[in-house]
Amino acid sequence: MNMSKIFATTCALFCISAAGARSEETVIPKFEGAITNIPGKSMVVEEVTFPPGPTSIPHHHAKSAFLYAYVLSGTIRSQVEGEPARIFHAGEGWYEAPGAHHILAQNMSKSKEAKLLAVFVVDTSDKALYTPDTASEHGHE
Image (cartoon, rainbow, N blue to C red; front, side, top):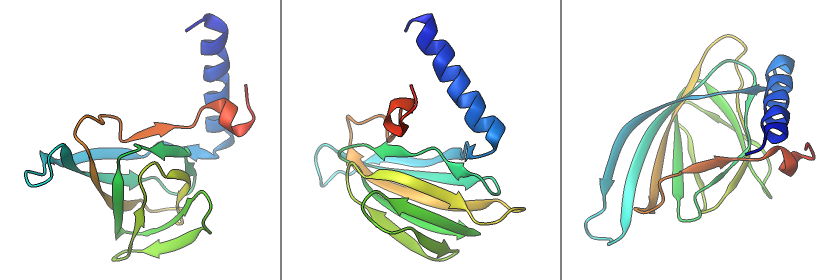
């Protein structure tokens, strides 16, 4: 990667952070294992903690990943491209199709964390469960 791209990426991330518009979630792996009766598939479970307020960075899920998200605590607003944003409370969940473009995830509280459990069924060879959008996907270069 050349220095101008590194500088542009650093500036974009700084501007996003300084504006308070984006956040980084904490992801804790909980389980990973092959699904023995479905050759080539694995289940991966992660606990995701969202800090109060800001939205997460839009991202794409792995092309093979079926995802079920279950809210453990708090209230999360979520949106997949092509669908309306929805609000989910503790005890509620949703499904995302393989390759989904997750354009919005936000903890609705300004003062408390929110947590969800993300359960993926994915090709065992897919190691990256999500890929953050690039600056160019948002009209920034």
